[in-house]
Length: 153
View 1: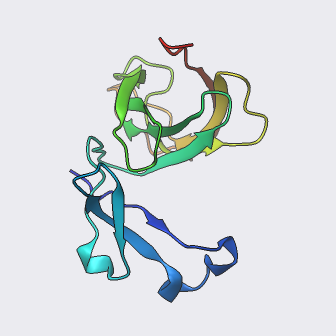
View 2: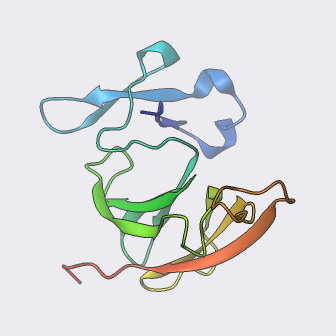
């Protein structure tokens, strides 16, 4: 499991001030998050596990946070009403060496121009070789679009 934690600052102007950060330290008995200024007290976000980098953003049309993972062989999408969860697995956006998205990683959700229930994203990756493994070719930059249909909409 990858270490996945979140931090906040009370003012957006403080984002560059490391000492203004507070780290997610858990959920209290009233299902509310609590925060700690000491990074060593940070804990992983429940329900989320990824081998590589992930991207998250608030989607105003869905009124949810979205989280996108990618790790060469598969990519997953999660949603939550709060950044600390609970997170709900939505599905895979690609799986396996035969996917056109194989060898994708470092996903980045693009918040600009989000539509009612969709968003664009960017990923890096390499072309697969004849054995289905990432080749030695140069990296490629790819754009994609994901649409999410919620049961409660």
